[in-house]
Length: 117
Image (cartoon, rainbow, N blue to C red; front, side):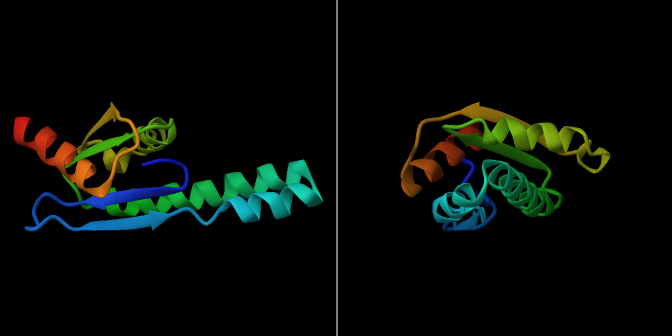
C-alpha cells in the first residue's frame, strides 16, 4: 500500500484475488488545489486521506490477521489510526517494509508471510 492505492488480498480465496482501493486525492487534484492555494491543497489532501484510511479500516474490521506492507509510510499511518480505535484491538495487525512490487510479487510476499505465521 501507499498513499495512492492499497491492494487487498485475501488468503482464503483460491486463486488469490486482488482488489484495489484507490485514494481520491490524485496528482491532478493536487495540482488543481495547489493553483488555488497551498492551504486548500493540504486541507483537501487530509480530508481525502482520512476517507481513504476509513475505507481500508472498514475492510480490515472483518479480518482476524492483517499484514500492511509497502514502500511508503502510509502503512504506519493506517496502523496508528487502527491502534487508536478499540474496535481493532482483537485484530492482529503487522507492518512490514517492502519495495514496490508487481501484483504477482505482492501475492507471493503475502502467501509467504502467512504460510510462516
